[in-house]
Length: 96
Image (cartoon, rainbow, N blue to C red):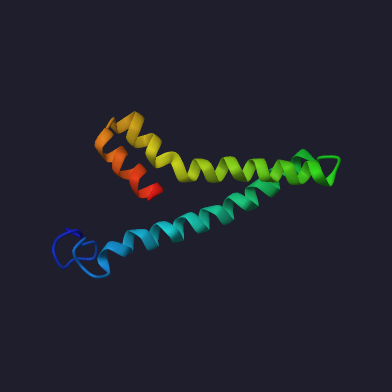
């Protein structure tokens, strides 16, 4: 098991606790780059009349994509797993 003592994800090791964090940062960063491309592509399809409308549309799409990406795990824990204790831990780790 990867979380056993001395394994990659051992929470008591010096570097093991950081592996999931680093992987999460890499995944979020790559998804945000994809979301940026998708937001520009969708806005190009809309073909807004003014540059300001174009920029506002891109900003709105990126906001929704990135918010969804950041908070989907908490929604899953809250509404599908129904695990209040784990949800509390996730919220504490997010804001502290």
